[in-house]
Image (tube, rainbow, N blue to C red; front, side, top):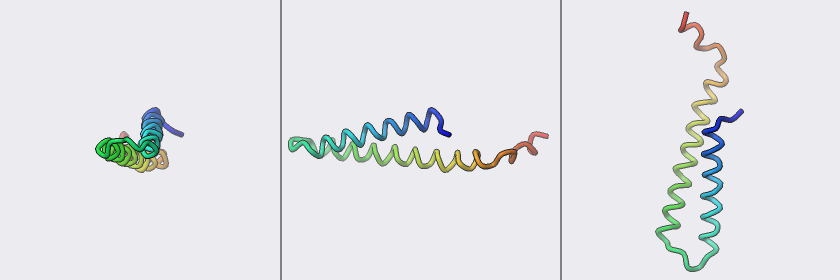
Length: 70
């Protein structure tokens, strides 16, 4: 089960990794651009992992919050 958020962050992450690979192959790339892409990849990975950790808890806790509403 995946949400639209997970799919979009995953797609952005894959795009950034592809871009970084292209930059690594090119000899005339800017070091600052490589660092920027690397930073963006780390941020996207953190967003993806944090979302998954939080959502996995709620996905597994079926009916855990129903008692609160009664």
